[in-house]
Image 1 (cartoon, rainbow, N blue to C red):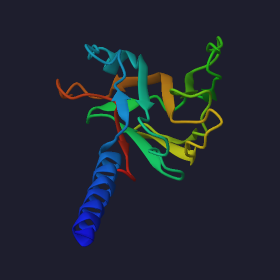
Image 2 (tube, rainbow, N blue to C red):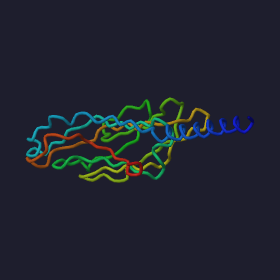
Image 3 (cartoon, one colour):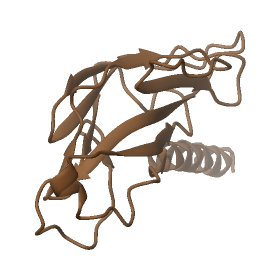
Image 4 (tube, rainbow, N blue to C red):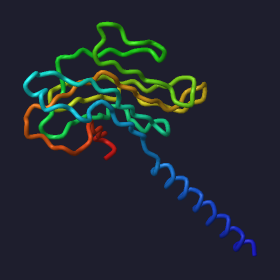
Length: 178
């Protein structure tokens, strides 16, 4: 009878470990797509005018999901390009963009007092924007936890009159997780 009880405890313990591992691996980031990119006039091909986007936001649902040295790549559908002549400025959580700020981003603690999540824009070309995770978030007590990245001021325009009339942009892809 003692072995039977021990077997049940071991099975329950193994099941708990299995389920906690499965739940952890099922957690993912939330991505809120940028707005301001719908109904772009094809006239922008002639005028060269860019449309300014609001967003995207990338939110960790658990600490460490955006891994250190990982990358996030923002891409566009064929027929569009990023304005790669803009400067990038990091803002504090309560700070508002200045008059001359172009692309801005904030790293905000989510559900905690602060986060160790740090990023940098490492490449800004007409076809893609690469963001590098310089420091991942950790849950180490002391009010630390997951983070959220809010990006504002990205600019896009059509470069051809033959552009797709469907698709979503920007499309963030974290190469290390997908």
